[in-house]
Amino acid sequence: MSGRPTDAEQAAYTEVLQQIKYRMYTADHFLSDAGHNYLSGPDGFPYAAEMAALQLRKVLELVLLGSLITNKSALAQSEKALARKKPDEALKAVEKLNPNFWPHPVLQVPVKAGALYVLENVTDGLKRDEYGRAFGLVSEWVHARNPLAQPLDPVGGREKLRQLYWKLIPLLNHFVIGLVDRDAMLKCQMAAYPIGAPHTGPGEVEVVLLERAGPMAWTLPPTAG
Image (cartoon, rainbow, N blue to C red):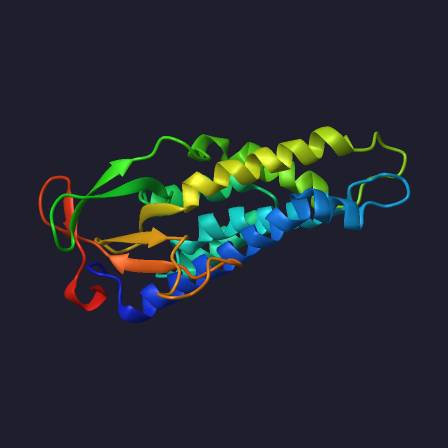
């Protein structure tokens, strides 16, 4: 099956992004000084970092699995690979099925009055070839360790998690992505707020279908305007 994502498929991907956004919001809290101080144990171990790592790992999993919502079989296979802690295997399998699976960060620039705009590339953000290392980093923090093994570095580890968080922000803030078995692309915005809503909390996400209006120009469909 090919063509445009259905309304139900767009709604399902919107739910994936909403979950990602709430998890990023939660990770941000646990990586803040307030969250760190609240959950630091008497031994000085940053238990808040473990909570942040769990949320970041789920974000990484959802980035990979989200574009497969239009193919239940592929989704199940990739989910199993991630459960076996084989992110590179899952990454290659997803890319083979859907070359447009990785979020393509963009900046939306209006070119004239109305809905027409161009999308400029954003070079910041987590890169596809960094996925395996990022997955390995967060996985270190979400499993119990051998009590006799060398403990994790509480200071350096927390800082690495913060760096990962700030790489995910530009990757996911505003991006274009394709769903498996679908030709049309989706423009996704994580910083979208309902009109009149205060800019507090994780806010809402926005997913719209792109309509090509030229080599680099796109327009929103009438139903989204």
